[in-house]
Image (cartoon, rainbow, N blue to C red; front, side):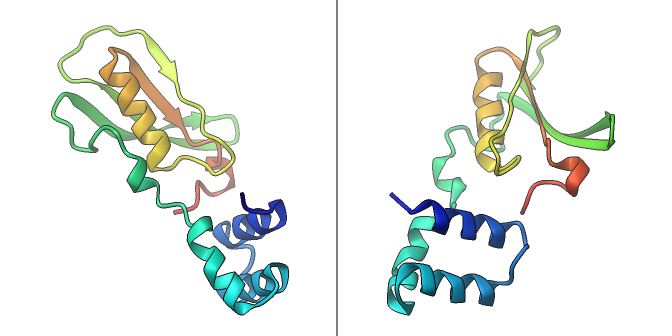
Length: 132
């Protein structure tokens, strides 16, 4: 388990609040040294691609990036539905604090394969969108 202070520091780096250099310097202090900091890096990285269950180009689905007007500006999102389906019940997929990412898009695709129209809005759109 990674210490909460380390996770918060990594989140600041991912949100571009601190530079890579600042992140590594502060991580070395929190972790107790440069070697410990570098050993900790693989535990922090979010390689969400490894968690994918449904392929992005699954031929059973129609997916697209969408935009729609929101109260504080344009909202971006991800839409997934079974291909060639007419009227469908809908599910809104809400992301966690890290924003709309490939894992949330994969969840939307899984829901679409279950016979629903799934939309995953990026709640961070008014703030510039989710980190890449």
